[in-house]
Length: 509
Image (cartoon, rainbow, N blue to C red; front, top):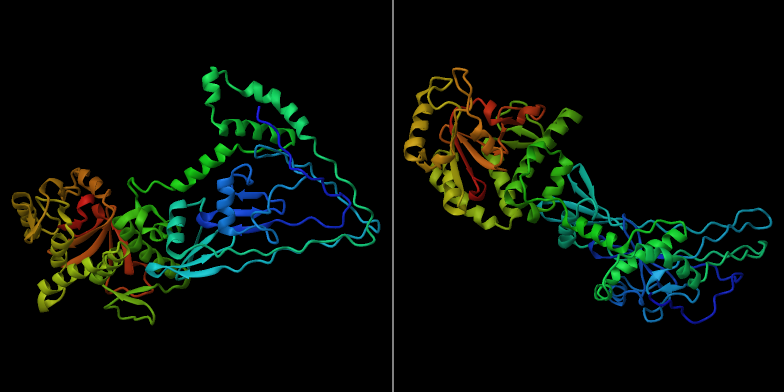
């Protein structure tokens, strides 16, 4: 059994007029919140439960916290330590029983302690047009336009850490609440019930600890991790004082799990996400990667437009050839929507220069006749290493009886090209919607749904769009800002165009 320790010195007089000193809250890095107590304890405040450290219980952690956020006001780090009336058992706090309420003789209420002043949030600007509001309690608001999403270190540790790494955390600050003295008319302070002596606590806890301890060989017992014993003591002491104390190892395990964050390595269907979910991805491009980030960016623009139409009757995007122009609306067509998404995505990945090369080649090769989608897909292959696949709902008979589609299907199958661009013949997405009404082959569509984002071209790139998890995202250039359909998404199996190509990052194809 570990030996008890008690700091020397007499306990302060319970009737002294020195009023209790209030703890001071400080915010540390990584979303941690610390509460500094006048007796030298540091309380690590977490949603899963608080844990206490002192210089005696964990010198390294204690010194690191004090070095980061400072000591309790009015005392140097060297002077701080547990108060003389606080018993310790190798770092396990034996907390005192609650003090009884003291009522002044006049029955008038004692003056309430001044509430800590609310600390204003700090605004920081990040990349990609995002603004972050940092709060003293550790919350972060992700702000873009009229949309705000709140996260914490617990709700999404990866996004939280990425934001803090980019713009920093809330500045360490504290507001010390003034001590409150009892009024002169008050009766003498009633002496609180003293906590049981630590010897008694240990004596009561020991049978429970012995009963909980597993049978071990002597050598194994000596090798037992101190943390296991600390957990058992903590639980026993919490039971004695009528409180549930979460074992320290469980707290640490929960914190490590929270730090791991959501699994971004598996298939992510951006098509099913709302704007709050998309905001988390957009705030953390490093975790989610180029493809998922690009898909989230495009979907967020569509949802932003549609939500604005639903709320106000006017959206954020209009087609370049609409007859009803709206001041302030972004004027787009199928090509600009694709290019702007790619530019933002390459920029988020730190590859703005690479996209500049892609775009320059596509512009040169398109010539004076206007930008051609097929040249963009060639440039993505040449400079970014992207790969292409052919698609057609029916390779034998197109719904419009246009020979272009059956001819393109034949060339893609025989030569592995589409309008001179290489396509992977083994991965073509074809015959999923048969013109004669017979059952189609949906295997290619299912494979396409696993590709987060790609550039889609139809009829030799005459029309361009983005394809996101199997759905075509496109701008209609004649739609007004008042139309939800200025930007819309349609599953490829239902999309009316009849042949074309998808170009996507090689790792996704």
